[in-house]
Image 1 (cartoon, rainbow, N blue to C red):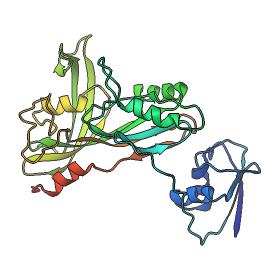
Image 2: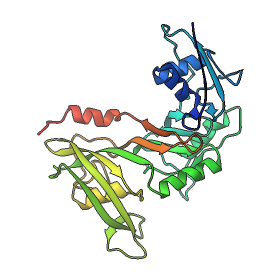
Image 3: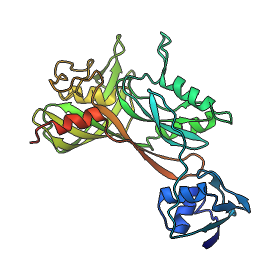
Length: 307
């Protein structure tokens, strides 16, 4: 057995699993397993949660066997058709939203919205938590969304989004062949009477939208792109690609005829929020959570002829 003891400094303060990973020079999953197996103490007391926040001055002791594989404890997964859990700690939760799920209810009071389902999940926690909305995804878009478990946490995260600090990466299948390998859309968006968005001249009623893209694959009749949001306006990606005459496949609102594709038979649109990077509001740790490409988009790519 090996014992390591170290005092937390201002530079190393943060989550317990990150601290253990650093001093033991091991993987993220191994560090969580070391904590789960009762090998870590903080200030003389047991550390049972990998997400335990450590502050400067805390004394951390790790007693473990470097030759042993420490596996994380398996926790029964929450079964919900509207989302899966991508990351969670005592302060926030990042979920992977299913396409077809509304983030919040409309004026019609739609049931089974994401905020409702996440709230139900959190209500099963032993301590009081609530699903505090930070940002949204369109109904037919899948991917990563973050919720604060307390209003104060959500406010700090919302401020990050206002300052364009989180890095939001999407994957999309768009109609036609994009000419440039990469580019940026800069335009102003406004809202019509039917609530659809459109590109317009700058005015007091419009919002600037900035979207960066990079071509990943050119297909015979579509393009697979990586999209990074600089601003996060409603329908931004969909409107700007449609305005460029390359709408997202399956989009029934923006250039719907061009968005039709004989092999895209899903009701959802081919847009997925695949990566979300942000600063943890409590620990200050720079975090990145990722979500794999949905099966429908992967299947489309496998069946497409590359050019």
